[in-house]
Image 1 (cartoon, each protein chain N blue to C red):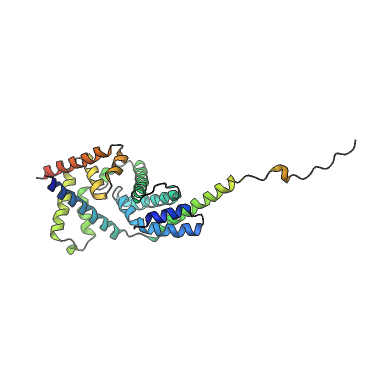
Image 2: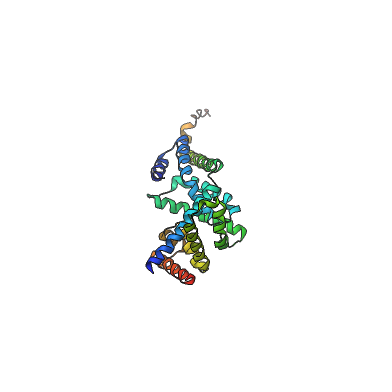
Length: 74
Length: 185
C-alpha cells in the first residue's frame, strides 16, 4: 500500500508539474507585471524617505529666533 | 533561482533607489512565474492577472521588511501574500474557491496548452489517474491533496494556513490519498 501511495503521490506531482508548465507557456511573465512590482518598490522607497524626513528633529526655535531688541527705556 | 536570499539580503541593506530597482528587477523576473502558477491555482483564470498584480505589488512593498532567513521562509511569505490577495478576490466576488479549478478542467487545460503529441501515452494515463484521485476525494481532501502535491506546498505551510499541527496535516494528507486510491480501485 505504501508503494501504491508513493506512486499515486508521484502521479499527482506529475500533474502539478504539467500544470505549472502549461500556465508558464500560456501566461509567460509579462513586462507589465515586472514594471508594476518596480513601481511598488519606488513607491515604498518614497514613503521611507518621507518617514525619515519627518523623523529628523526640527531645528530648535530658540536658535533660529533673532535676538530681541533691547527694551526701550521707560 | 538559487540566489534569492542573497538578493533579498542585499535589498534589505540597500538604501539607494536605483540599486533597489535593479535588485527587485532580477528578483521578480525570477519569481513571477512561480507566483503566477500559485495564483492561477487558487483563483479563476479570468481573475488571475488582477490577483497576480496585487500580489506582486504587495511583495514588492513589503520586501524590505521581510525578516526570514531562508528560501522556504521567503516562499511561504510570498504564498501567504498571494493567499490573502486571492481571499480578497473571493470576498469581493463571494465565490467558492474550491470550484475555481475543477478536476475535469485540469486535463483540458493541459491538453489545450500542448501539441497533441507532446504528452506521451503513459504520462497521459498517469495524469488521468491523478485527476481521478482528485475527483474521488471529498472537498476537504481535495484541497489538501491539491495544495500539497499539485501546488507543492510543504506540510508546514498548509499547517499554518489551516491552523493545524504539522503532524495532523501530514497524517491527514496521507489518509486522504489512501482513501481516494481505495475509491478508484
